[in-house]
Length: 183
Image (cartoon, rainbow, N blue to C red; front, top):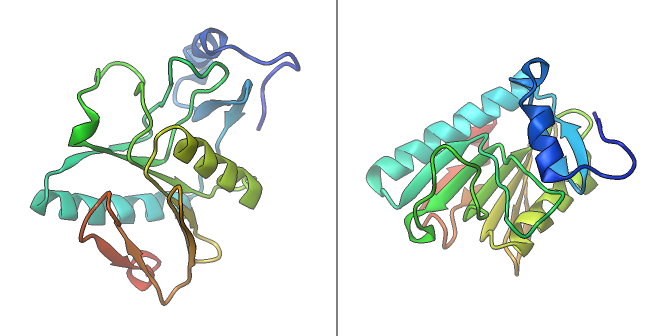
C-alpha cells in the first residue's frame, strides 16, 4: 500500500506521519520517497519466529552481535529512505548504537520475508539497497514458494527446499536446513 504524494516524502515528513496516533503499530517504511505499508500474514510471522529461534540459539553459543526485529534503518546521507528489515543482525564490530533511535548504518545481515503485494522485483530492490549501503549479506525468504535467495555483494544463490542457509562470513558456522525452516 503506497501512501505518498507524487512529489516524494522527506524523512522528516515521514517521521511525523508515522508518529500520528492512527499510524502507531503500522509497519510503515519510506522507500524512494514513498510511504509503503507492509501487510504481513500469519505465515510471515511463523517464518520470522522460526528464524529468530535458530539465530538466537546460534548467538547463545557465539555472542558475536545483536539480533533485532523490525528495526528502522535510516542513513544520514540517504534522503527519502527509512527501511525496516524484518530481521537484522548487527555484528559487534559495527559499533554501538542508540537504542532509542533508528540504526544509522545497515546491519551486517538483513532478512526480508515476502508479504502479499511484494513481488520478486521489490524483494531484490530491498536486497540491492542493503548491499549497496554496507550490508554484508541479505536473505530473501519466499514462504509460499519455500525458497530463499541468499545474497552478498559478490554472490547470489537461490536455495530450494533441499538446501541449507549458511551464515557465511557474517555468522560463521551457522547452518539451517530449509526443510527445518519451512517445517
